[in-house]
Length: 185
Image: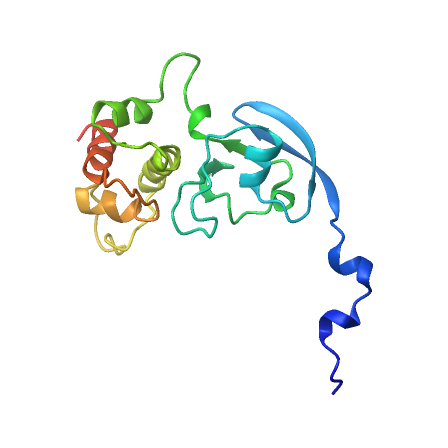
C-alpha cells in the first residue's frame, strides 16, 4: 500500500476547480434557467442566484427545517438538496403559496393564531404544514400513528408530523392551532 494520501493522487485541476452546469427550475410559478456550480444546493440557488429569500438558511445541516419548501409537491430540506439533482423541478416556497393578493389558508391561520414570533422559521413551518396535511390525507402514517387503525389528526399527531421544523421562539401552540384551523378541527 502506498503511503501517498489519496488527495495527492488526483491531478490538481480535478480537485479544486468548480464544475458548472446549466439547469432549469420553476420557482413559485416562474421558469428560470441558470448556471450553477455542481455543489450548489437548492437553498443557495434560490437565495443567491434567484433572489428568492423565502426559504431561510438556519443550520445548513438539515436539522432545523427553516429551508423547507415544496419540491415537486413534497416537502424538502433545500440545504441538503443539490440543485443539479433537481433539474426541471417545480419548487413552491411559502411566498409562492399565496394566490395574487390572497393569502394561502395556512398563511392566514398562522397570522390568526400567532403561529410565529420572530418569523425566521415561519416560511419553512408553513410549507411543512401544507405538505404534512397532504401526506396525512394520502394516508402516510407517522411515528404517532404507527400505521395501526384509522388516523386522526390530533394535537400530538400534528406535533409529530411537524417535529422536523424547529422554532426557537416556541410558537408551537400557535402553529398547532393554525394547522387545526385549516383542517376545520
